Amino acid sequence: MQRWSGGTMNVIENSPFTKKLSAFATLSEDELAVLERLHQRRRTFAAGSDLVHQGQPEQAAYILAAGWACSYKIQQEGTRQIVDFQIPGDFLGLRSVLLRTSDHSIEPIVEIEAAEVLADDLLEVFASTPRLAAAILWAASRDEAMVVEHLVGLGRRDADARMAHFLLELGARLALVGMGSKAGYTCPLTQYHLADALGLTAVHVNRVLRQLREAGLVTFRDGQVTFDNFDRLVALAEFDPGYLDQAGPILK
Amino acid sequence: MQRWSGGTMNVIENSPFTKKLSAFATLSEDELAVLERLHQRRRTFAAGSDLVHQGQPEQAAYILAAGWACSYKIQQEGTRQIVDFQIPGDFLGLRSVLLRTSDHSIEPIVEIEAAEVLADDLLEVFASTPRLAAAILWAASRDEAMVVEHLVGLGRRDADARMAHFLLELGARLALVGMGSKAGYTCPLTQYHLADALGLTAVHVNRVLRQLREAGLVTFRDGQVTFDNFDRLVALAEFDPGYLDQAGPILK
DNA sequence: CGCAGGGACTGCTTTAGATTAGCCCAGCAT
DNA sequence: ATGCTGGGCTAATCTAAAGCAGTCCCTGCG
Image 1 (spheres, protein in one colour):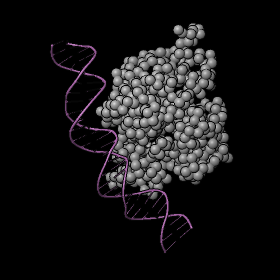
Image 2 (tube, chains in turn orange, brown, cyan, green):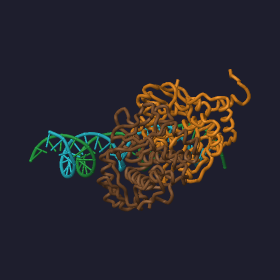
Image 3 (cartoon, helix red, strand yellow):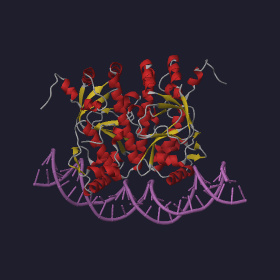
């Protein structure tokens, strides 16, 4: 059962980016048309092939349409810190458009599809549709708030709470673009990804996941996250999704 | 010996905010005049009296003119994570203007002087002087890059490197507004502030500072940071100031 | 068919940093 | 002059997580 309002319009209405911005403001026909144009220059990237590399001067940003990516920084000794994961509807490399060089790298985790957005496109959007500009700034602020929350996790939460918080946040983000619910979600990340994001070793990630599973809180297995006891998990993580600025307490 | 170009203009030319934005672009007379107007609504806040509180809906942002502040989040158990320190020339609470509620608190560390900036003021600046708008977005991106670097520190650096990196970054930031050099800077932070920022305990901060001092790298004492061996400190911290987008390698 | 590689998983040992419990000293209020 | 307070400092003990070393189990492939 699908409602067709006409032409390509319904494609853009169902894009994850549109879904996300709609949480901030209801969008007009005009604004949808501008978004439609932003999605024009589609490109595909294979898993593992960095699309932004740390230290390079970088002009283009991308809107992720399908697949997962992560932004990270590598240290001299080779250790990697994943700063954030990007899911459909998220911007990639928006910050490196403004700073003269990119301070981080971005790697697709699976094959991804993304729309290239040039600095000029952005300026045009900002000039022509101020409400969209505000919506994009909202999304950027939300991303920054997530990084801050992640920082708090690394500084002040132990491994269990950190993991629980991470899995819950991801769930809430996925729910906003229709890819997750209070029951769980599919997730292509390996335990190594979790380790690099949470500042742990893969070995310890494994132990933590086992503990959470045996405690009947969450199961992370075969690319599937299942919330076994949502409320107790929220309590363990002290998860307060206020910073995500989404409607309702969390999920459905 | 002071050069007077006329009227109040030279005041704004010497403001830390102007100095900082000048690292991004040379500003015209017109743009300086707009900055002048932004600095109009001056307010003073006592040390310790939060000017933004976590969870409150918040409209105004501030440009810090004098003094130091910090933004932080508090957990249920009472542990605090300082996200960043703000020094003269920095924006306070810009993100909480865009998100519907503030996700963090901001506390003055000493008595501060700040100019109140309302959402409408910002919109006006964005509409009238696009180059200033770009400069403000640049500053915001730079702040975000600092948070990211901080995140990497918490996730992947040990206590010594974390401390070294922190002290160097602060030095570079202060140098940009004329308050620090390669020799050192004055700094009103207590060891408790450092602990809350670096995800350590005050006890351990003390140990780390002692080690750095005894190794002849930096001295943190009586509100004064002295770089005893700048180059070895940079090496220990793996400090690469690229993310600060400042001219020259670091400092003078 | 056998083997190579990636991902998940486990037990044992070691270490960085937390926790706890204090001391010292300067400033200042009584 | 005495007691209190806040910031800096130290030592002894405890613990979360890392490091190391390895097994198991797939899936793809020459």
